[in-house]
Length: 59
Image 1 (spheres, one colour):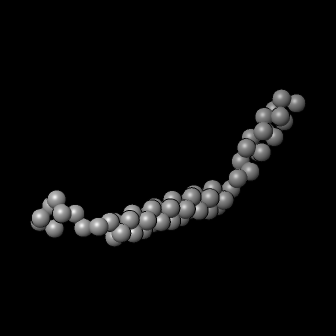
Image 2 (cartoon, rainbow, N blue to C red):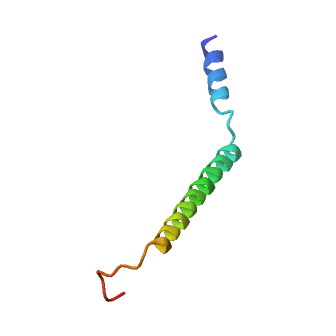
Image 3 (spheres, rainbow, N blue to C red):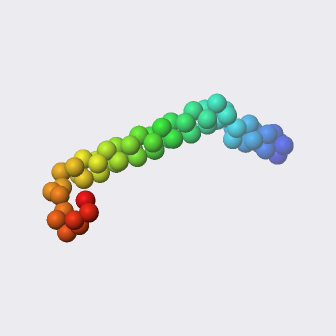
């Protein structure tokens, strides 16, 4: 009976197939990249809206 329980637990623990894990990891990577692109775009817009600095004459 104990072997059957162990076998059942091991079978249920492996329910997530490698393809599902890979798809989930790819989705997380896409979301992370999308979030980074949105942040960069936001900071670019913020930089464009700032008035030119008069403290640094080399610009």
